[in-house]
Image (cartoon, rainbow, N blue to C red; front, top):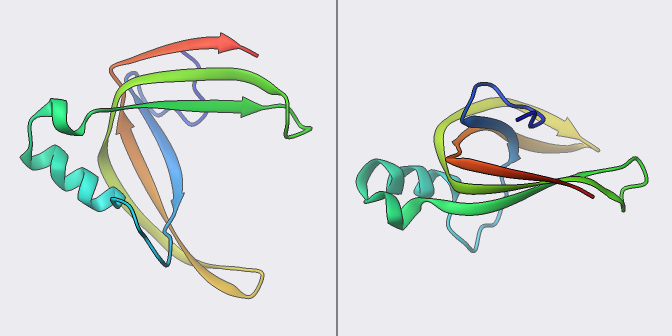
Length: 102
């Protein structure tokens, strides 16, 4: 299934902007759960939407089942509009994917 950023069958890779303030579970805590807890407690469901150039129209929708992080790689510090931003590359395992247009 052609998912943008796909690195291998059953995985998807995404860039993640590390927030300066976090009120919900962090990606690192989620990965720790994967390493220590039963699958039914950490596997989640997610939706990825691919938008047209207008930024409004959904071109394709990916419903992802049993998704969870498998690897986190820190990237270099980057400057955006004069502010320092820290990004990470996160690889997710995906058990299944349903693709629909629009």
